[in-house]
Length: 347
Image 1 (cartoon, rainbow, N blue to C red):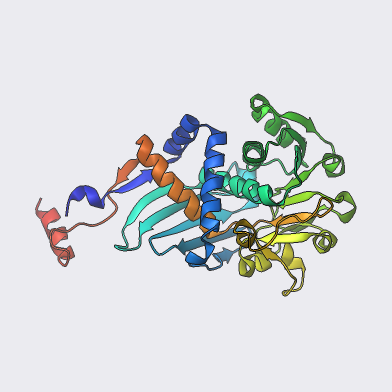
Image 2: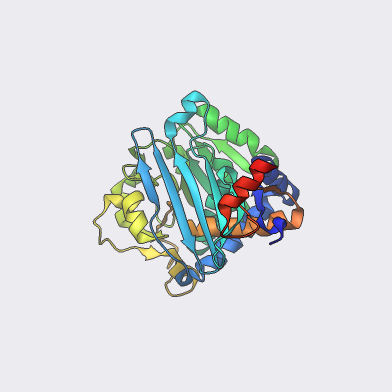
């Protein structure tokens, strides 16, 4: 077998940034939203399982696998909110795409940046089906690592151009506003979550603490709002008062995972929710009327990572922005792996 065929393409953090900057952040987010929606339309073709999670007092480490029968993908990701105290990221990730026919990996990539992009793209894709018509104002409660990506995804996909920011750390809001200053938003930094949501068409919550927090209370949410709940993504970690859930039409990715990890872990296990893929394919309605409160209980699902890796494999190939790793053993005779070791010793 040609040695070249056994080299695995690798997209490093530096290569990832080159790809994104060459294409532009907003075009990348639009492309990812389209790739994710395309795979949601063929949802029933995928293997589906809730992610495998290892929880600790400090955080969680997870594996997220799926396959469409032609390609297989998985992501390794952690969530450790206390890492920031030591100058470390709350979330880091890497992922792999493989060929099902041979079992050979074809792409290994950083996914810390890519996960932020795909999470934001999924949020915006969902909001395209759920948000009020003509939405222009978004409140963002929690202005950490995800916030700029969320803002730009909603701008790129829905046309959001006004942001109302709030974080318990005012420096985080100032940083977010500064980072977004050149992207055409009108930005207001708000002292409280209550003031941030006033006049907002969409409310995005993306806080990091692994706790059953109450970022939004029932009195803060008026009729017709779309809530993009991003931060509640593991057992014991929520952001919304349960009364908000009871007033809302709730949309989820994969119910067996969301009932354990999402906002709906606060509700009975048989509480009715709508799977987002059914809205995307037209089997179920999204927003029904202007007064309805819609809630996307987003926890992230492996199919979204599959979509992101599928998009990246094409983008990296087109741009040449990848390295090649000698990751797969390649003996001259496939059954003589030990002989390969002996020949290396002789050499």
